[in-house]
Length: 80
Image 1 (cartoon, rainbow, N blue to C red):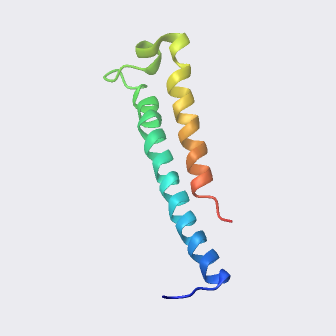
Image 2 (spheres, rainbow, N blue to C red):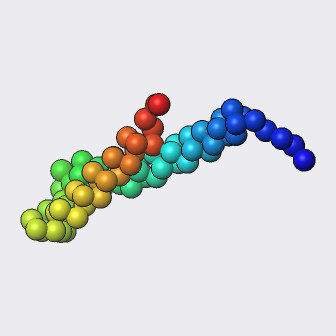
């Protein structure tokens, strides 16, 4: 049986928490990136804009997803 002191245990917890937070950051970017790319590509006549697809009232859904993804990324990549 290997004994660890509280300092080692807290370091391991921080390492796991850091990995989890970094993973949440990448997940947030993965959620936000396609929506932000679609927003930029919607300016081209080939790609339908978000306004055409969702309408004025439905535009809140992709906007909320993009904001939530960016918030998740900000939390995940925050240096403590």
